[in-house]
Image 1 (cartoon, rainbow, N blue to C red):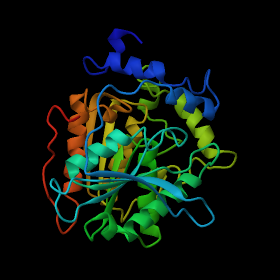
Image 2 (tube, rainbow, N blue to C red):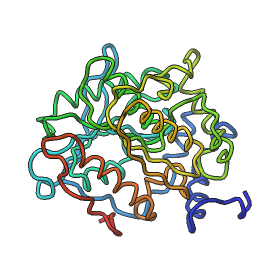
Image 3 (cartoon, rainbow, N blue to C red):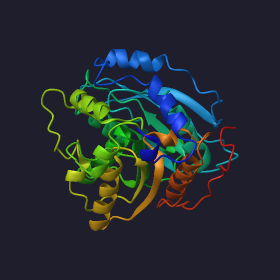
Image 4 (cartoon, rainbow, N blue to C red):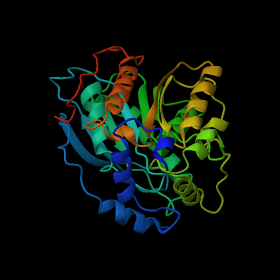
Length: 335
């Protein structure tokens, strides 16, 4: 990509090139999921220390009927920062339904717990290709049901919870919101969708304009899709492509998109379709950012701004303690 074509914000190109260099060459020289995971596991750890929260606990919860238990990581805020009941957020990590885990998104979960004063339950759902669709969806919905039944144990407000995720995790959050509506619960008060995959058949301009050179590539997405669909998944199914579903009666949404992301247009299309269906929507759009930028608040002002927008949406949840406090991250959010 020539510098004249580079639409990234100033000083971001070096970061994008760095993370691209350590990411597996999916769909080209790397086609095996286990190998891709080994490459990711060998990547250097970030140089900053984890953000401190009140407590972090790894545990397992019941999975769907006939399926294994689901590992989760529960983050609770410091009681001094968030006294009394708090918002509860179920978080689904990204990674194309194939990669990543609780550790890869530990930093994001800590940011949300610390700055929103929220109980965050991060879900280690089953991954493809070993467990293709609908395993991840089934685990995600089972996790939301469990969290809703254990709000008191988590110290959560006795109201609707929030679901959130980035990329494939944003897809799962959107799908779970539709399933919860269709199956009569549990009550979800907010869906936070961070550069979500919303339609596996989508052919918006961002798919070609951002096909390479901005970390997530079209080759990556095609490979992820093959792993997730397995031999029989229908890419147009609304539990794979929620943009194709009925969006009426869904909870309010906050949608974050990045201008240099192949998924940009479908994320914005989902926000627009939600509005058309009468769903309240707020958006954070960052034209000079790339897919994955939210994971770097220690380095990027836009990431801090995007996190602040998510926190504001959480604080505006329809909870007895709504509008509890403001985002406290300013510059050094990694303390």
